[in-house]
Amino acid sequence: MSTITTSAAATSTIGGTGATGDLATTREPTAHDEFQAAADELTTAAKGLLPPADEPATSAPRADWPRLIEAVRESGQYTTTDEAERITRLVLCALGGHVVGDERVELARRLPEEAARLIASQIPVTRPLTAPEFVDAVATHIQGATRATARWDVSAVLTTLPALVGDDLTTRLLAQLPTGYALLFGKAELLTRAA
Image 1 (tube, rainbow, N blue to C red):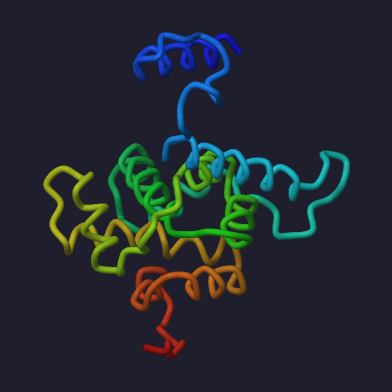
Image 2: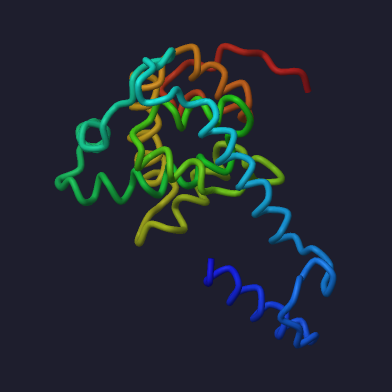
């Protein structure tokens, strides 16, 4: 609670008002406030959809993080678990901003908790990247990556997801994403989209 108060006071001082009272009356909401509110709503919605601890889950059970990392290590033929984990974190963070709505909540529910946090912590993008742009965006975070090596890394992670989350959810995720992502998930591009 004190962190929020301190941050609010600091924001108020930076804004030039010098007030330490209620910020709602001293400054206009910012884009950050709107993004934070949206993130809070997503977190609340995700918690509301999870069954209580004593009630069985109605969807597929969560995979565990070490099994996910091992699947990525094998898929990408990485020499170390650390490398596979680093790539997994990068790709899931990038994916998290592109998946929205019920599919985002269900994806977070079916993935290991560490992966779910990576997905849920991302602010939804205003314009989904095309598959090549997505690969290029991931490449910027991998030292020495080329488009080809980044495509390999993205596919190493995304091709493991259908086995963890199921084909139905994978199909729904792909319906949200621009054409071209299916190949990154190891699926044929079956849907014809209207121009």
